[in-house]
Each structure stands twice: as structure tokens, then as C-alpha cells.
Length: 393
Image (cartoon, rainbow, N blue to C red; front, top):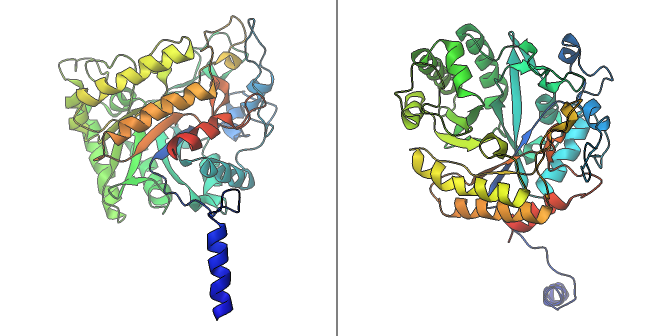
């Protein structure tokens, strides 16, 4: 017994000797770093319904066929892991391990429902089938925009419509049953005060599809009731803030007399965040683009009666989706500058201790829009390293 205590003492002493074996540093992650996931890099059968991506690799086809369009253009972007099938639970296992190692502890999956059926849902399902999925939280953002030829790298006319984004009450009731039963009740679904967070991408499209504000309020109240019946504490409804903040977030004609915050209150929205800086700041050199976006935090904070969760965008270059003339892209993006903007988001969270410590990032894998944390052949894991360095400072 004495010999045992001596060994422990020596080991403990050695752990603090400079240059010796260091005892592992234990840290508790202070921030919830939530990255959006664009679940398009696999062979969803519905791609073929609209005649896209015949190679069978989903939108990877646009990435490996991208060409530089001007001097210094960073195209094609080459993923370090190759053009893998993200709807594979094995690949999701690797993604989860990597994300959580660097401090990305939550994924926000873009989630689609068109014509009474899900679209691109295989990725979140693969995530949930990964053996390590409970290492990480997740929630869903209903990407309820109209699906059009913006996704088609061969099509110059981006106005061709495949599926409309507006949803009827019947369809809403159908898919929200699915959401509550199959996602919201999962133990690793991201919740605030026990309520599953559900984000809506286009609030105006949602309200218009339901038929107006009163109908939208009734539908949301119904969803809240379903959550409570399922044993949850309710619903945490989140709205995505867009450009210039219109007089009413609903964007519905005839409702311009409503203030933005009245719309938020009427629907019972409990928080706001952004999806991408390009939604409200014109594209330009990265340091200036980010400074203008960060400056908006104060406006968002003071304009609404609900919490605003700060957002950071990695980049923007959607040229892989355009066959002809070069599209404007953000310039001079560096991991270090991204880290500086993330630090500002952390400072905002620190200054708002009474709200969830949530920061959203665009994106984990928006390769087709040039905004991603997944490692590439140019920067490797440098953007992820900035997250680890910043949140554990």
C-alpha cells in the first residue's frame, strides 16, 4: 500500500515538471457552436425527378466540375476527404468525431418538404444512425424556399421552378407529426429550456402558404400542442433574419402596418439568427464584409424583444452553380480573420448571459457556395483550428 502511494506522488509531481508528461487539461465547452449542414452531397432519388446530378453523387458534381473564372479565383475547391457519400452512417461517424474534436457541438440540418414528401432527409437520418451520434446535438431549419434551377450548374436561367416553397395547413400538419415523433423527441435534439428548437428559413413564405397571419399562428400553436403531448416542454420557434429587415417579418402584402417585433410576438417566435451574411450585407472583401455584419449584432439585439443568436459566415462563392459569367465572390478570406469574427460572436454571448450560449455558423459543408468548415486541400483543418483556439481561450 505504501509503494502505491509513492508511485502516485511521483507521477503527480512529474505531471507538473516543465517538459514532462502533462496531465490532460479538462475543459467544459462554454459555447454551443452550431454549423448549418447542406445535405446535398449524396444521390437522393428526387434529384433525378428534376433531372439533376446524373453522376449519382449529388451536388458534388458541381464542385468537381467548377472552373476558375478570374485571376486568383479559388476554384475548384477540393475537399480533403474526397467526394464522399454523406448519407452514409460511417461517414457521419467521421464527421461527428471531427466536428466535436474542434468544438462544433451542434449541427443545424437544412430540412426540406415538397409536395407532401421529404427531400434530402437521408443525411440527418444517417447522422442519427452513426454509432457516436449522441456526442453531438442537432436541430432542424425548415428550408421552405421554392426549389428552382439555382441548383443546376448547366442552367443559366435560374427562375425555373421545381417545387414551390409554400405549404398548406394539411401538409404542415402531416410533416410536423413526423418532426415531433422522429426528431424533436431524440435525446440529442437541441433544446432551450426543454423546448426543441425549430427554425424557419422564410417566414413570409410560411405565412403566405398558410393563408395569412391568423392561420400561421393557429398552425404554430398546433405544433406547440403536439410537442407538449409528446412530453416536451413546448416549442422554441426560431426565425432566420434576412436583408434589410422589412417592415413586417412576414413579408405578406397588406401587413406593412405591423412592426417587425409585433410579428415576432404574434407568432410566439422565441429567438432570431441569420443563415448567411450575404442575406443582409453586400459581398466584398472578407474583413470589411464581416465587420459590417458584426456591427449588425447591436441592431438585431435592440430591435426585437427576443434573443438574437450571433452568426458568423465562413465565405461566399456560388460560382460552381453558374455556367457562364462570373458571380461576385468574397475575397481575401483567411482562417485567422474568421477566428477574429468568431471571437466577436463569443463576446456577444458573454455579454448576454441570460440567453443560451448559441452561435450559428454558415456552414459545415456549403461547398457549392464556398462557405464550409470541412477540411479542404488548401487550408486543411485551419478554420476548425480557429474554432478550437477561440472557444477554449
